[in-house]
Length: 264
Ligand code: SF4
Ligand code: SF4
Image (cartoon, rainbow, N blue to C red; front, side, top):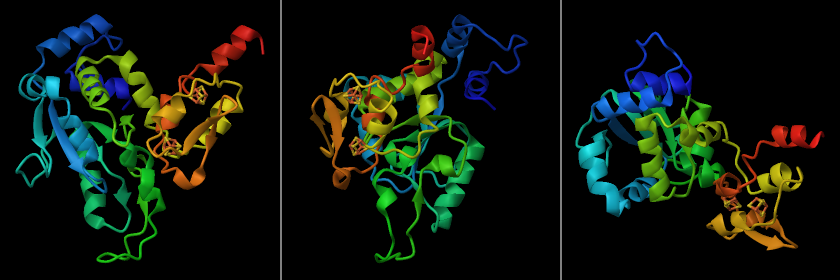
């Protein structure tokens, strides 16, 4: 099922004969719909993404009381059995040697309308990409992958952690069926092989870099610096979170359209 179909299904629009419902119709149905059930699933993550959700201080109370119901989450809800959910925020990558995580991820996909890779570990693997095993008490736990390698992911919110604002806005956009806002998140669901080197290969080498420095400012490990107006990567510092590339104002630029307009 496409992401748009999932959101329409979530909003109760699947029975409508008009499959191309207008934005106004989606918003109207969203207003009338009961509060969405949100689950927070914690795989191989550090809980930083969940912490960032709770740091929506100014809107957290109305978000939790008026807009959504948190129905599942080991650190938030005292419930062992996973219920049906509208949106599942999955934090952390998935360890291929951990059967419990594999089963939990499969169950999330079966029980959630929208599966969101919540934070860079879930979206790109982030620093768990460097896991090699050999540590007590589970020395065989050595292979960690982004969740999209194992199940269909509808949206990704990279970040280590993502900002509180983008978490809240993404949830609200999913509730309202705001496809314009969600479009980059949908694209990012396929961006699992993140690296600071993406700036060189996908932006600078494509003649798209404008030297704005956003990538270097966004990098939380200072793996990037600006040299002669272009980003330079210190690979030893890169944790493969993907934030530099997703924050770059030229990363999701419509290159084909630019070439077409320039007659290239
Ligand atoms: S954010 Fe993008 S456009 Fe700006 S300096 Fe970095 S690579 Fe160039
Ligand atoms: S360069 Fe920095 S922001 Fe980019 S992927 Fe590496 S750690 Fe993340």
